[in-house]
Image 1 (spheres, one colour):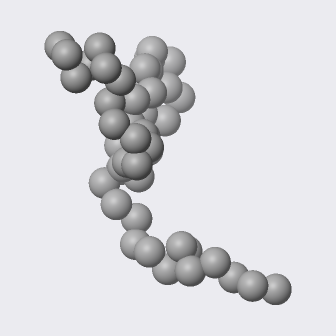
Image 2 (tube, rainbow, N blue to C red):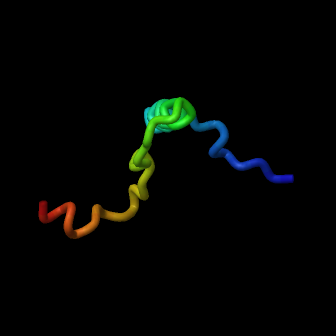
Length: 50
């Protein structure tokens, strides 16, 4: 079985943000998940224009 090398990459700040969002959601707070994106794609045109 081939094991991927991505497991060797240390976690980065988005993992902390995702944990905080999950904690808030578990506490019953509303959470709008915007903490993860696609770095290979740009922001939507409306966001860029704003």
